[in-house]
Length: 600
Image 1 (cartoon, rainbow, N blue to C red):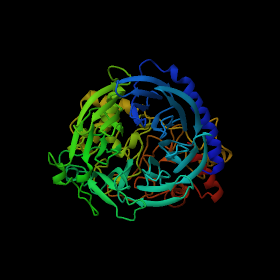
Image 2 (spheres, rainbow, N blue to C red):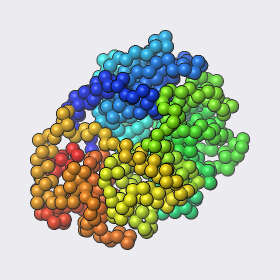
Image 3 (tube, helix red, strand yellow):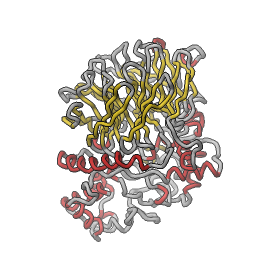
Image 4 (cartoon, helix red, strand yellow):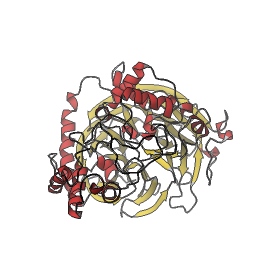
């Protein structure tokens, strides 16, 4: 739910402190941490690249031709995007866990920190206007586009956009920015100068909108995403492309034309989790990273078979032929952000799991050099588990990874019909995995008592992949133990509860609300299962294990089948206290209770 202006101001004070702490403490990190570059940007002259290093909390300046790191500076917690002004003199980094943007100055191959700006909860994608005056930030948890004055380094405008915006890209007109809403499955065109939303386009059935780039030939935005189907998650349906599809969608934008799509998956050799996207300046090449299958897709733009209707579940045969216009270059690791560095077709790829920047000759489809950014020589148990979590090769036909549904260890808010309840025909909401190692038993019905066994079952039954080794299963659980809740934007700067939330806590603990009997602090769950009066869902189970309420503000929709779209709907229709052993609460008590739930 969108935050009010007063709460946004209070929260901004809190994240300002978080930014300062992150910057001052970065040098205290252990020597040689994993850099895990998530995004990359290239200076206008093509000489230098900047990488946002997620796990190191740093920004690296790289000389592309020389193949070496020139500088590395701290920037904040969990940076996920980086952008450079068109004149190449200023850069910005969004810090997901710090809630801020860090500014840097670039000159003659040197990098200098230039302050931070609090922007709100969970900032993601960035884009400068063509004159460099404005910086746009996708503030994912607030469903907003924040516009910053680049000179004053402050937020001057907040524009409501689709749910959980991730990716941004500046349009050729220099003033419009395309904003991709990951959870709303929509893309909006926003005029940065006026704040007007010019157009909004829904991509039906889509999820995980991750990359957006403007086609220089047509002037239209192209988005990378997956499409979720409603069929049971069986091996046969996975093979047919009836569970998850990977696609490109070209949107009308302001052109007045029609939405068009391209299917990317080949039978038996699908594309896992399409992410970064870039066009060459001459419009000859379109490149897309596929981190789930560890590759770079290289497409001849002039030969793309755009379809005005449904493109089908598998790639067009002509495109997939050896000289059909698509080449799949294996890069290894987890390639994410991508950018062109020259008109001749040189591109750079931020490879998260390799701790490296890869330089690619796009016309020749070969890696020219790999530039190490720093990090341990050998991955530990948690890092190996992270690689498994993001590996679509673990699924039948390489169609999807754990991350496809449990987005970055959280949830995309989608339902899937799996055998995790021992039956088909009752799709369940994908639960968040944040804190999962502490909140057993597992599955909505709580029948899984062993997390390692549950993860093994997911890999072999849901994903129809090979049996993991004991070490692989242990590594995956070790990675899950690292997943943390982001800072809660509904708390005061010192982490305490506001007045309404304190009143709501008393309601929560009262006999009338009857919440704490099942959702017991401090994890706000319990190890039991309960009849919560939701009716028979067709599975062999009639009782449910209460999910942890920690981070519940970021998890809508609610209940096992997503029937409640908001917390208010949950408490007034489907999960009322008087249905569950308590008594009726009035409107004021319910409002306070919701404020407390949001604060958890």
